[in-house]
Length: 296
Image: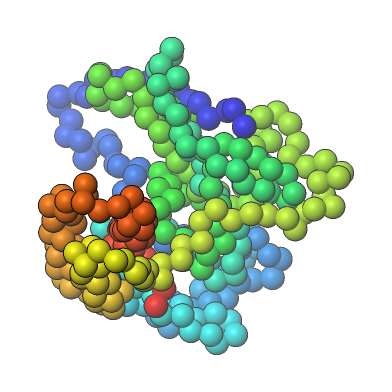
């Protein structure tokens, strides 16, 4: 999978125009949650008692404010969830379809080698691809993690324009529905994704991101580290129940202070196994505190 390159164009900003006159930030998706339906029959669901009926191949979007919301599927199953301030939107996926995110390098000529998106292995219909691609079938796909500049249904532009003359390039990402990604792959690579043999394994698909935000636990022998871990756990228990932006911001401030105190830990006095366990625990804590949407 070696086609993650597009053109970066430099431009000067006219001094007689303000930025808001001609430029909107494509990375700003605050509160914008997309949904789609690849099935033949309509997809019906409710969010906060508002009914959505999504036809075959249709894409929709709902704007949600920070706070508590409820997703209700067509069989009456209700799933409470929280939207957090400083979210970047995402995908609401009641039918558990597969979605993908792919990173594209935009670079000035001869500077493309300076950018290296992280590669991952993903299986699509029995075919293993390796490249800057990730996948998920979670009910709530968090764009704070997927980081899609361009949402489902919106293609990568052939080039982007920047106004910083020192920049040599950038990495942009896009979210895809499954068929949308297969079409993108085949167009960019010039080859079919499937062979006759592959079609026998068409149900073989992998997921890289499960968005499992369960509060972590850890058992440490070092009393200082264990005390800090318990402080984080207590903070997270508050955070996953913070149903308004004010509460969320206050807890994030407490988290920032607690995280900064990590620099005062005397790591040289702690054995390596304990450090690894604590670092893995802290990484999970960080994932939750930086989430844009969480199921309850």
